[in-house]
Length: 324
Image 1 (cartoon, rainbow, N blue to C red):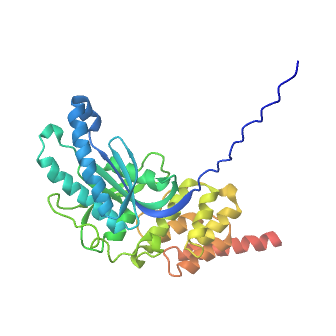
Image 2: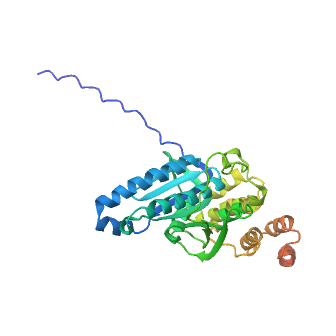
Image 3: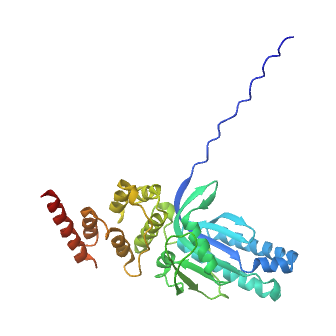
């Protein structure tokens, strides 16, 4: 009995994992307040209202130069290259829905909660994720229905433009974020109209251009650095150095990479001169004189100048004693 020839095994192509991109964006996270309750009361009417509202929301995001990154049920996640565009779009969404809800019976009125953050995100298959997205989602959960809740970094970008005023909501400990988040509510006229498109944010360079207003450079870098510290991951410190090779915290990042066993999640910087305080909180317990020297070089008249000089003296004496 002859044995039939063995059929060759099929060849399988090796599929490479899609590359992961990292970029700095303004992140908008939104969902419908009381959506589960509305669905329980009347599914058909709730879905009809959601569909109409979502059409308006999607159009406003596109007109406002945003890009929708994800939708799930009643939620929306979008990204913007400009913080000003993101804020204008968020306010415009609330204003349009405020007027649309006025034409509906009370039981069908659907109000959105919106959170805005500026942060470094990872992009995979067109979806953004990471700490920046998580913070935006937590801000959305803090927002009152019909309002927009933002981080201090977003507030710092737009506070001098005069378009809005803000209510300070204080610091909040939020789930899965290793530092308190300072939140603000944007005060705006819900019955007003916010123009989007060419006029909105026209004078603000986008993140993709590599430019940001000088007034917000420290705020952006601080947000990035605090996110790196909160992660406690070696790769995050490397990512910081790629973006800010000569940044304020570059000496600290290099020191941490040289001693990965020291990586931890320190508390966030208190209110005040945020960048300087964050820098000092990172170096104050170090035994490395270079860290205190880096502080003095960056902040020659800083609030902790005397303490830094004392620590340098102490560490210098310790080295002499060890050598003797």
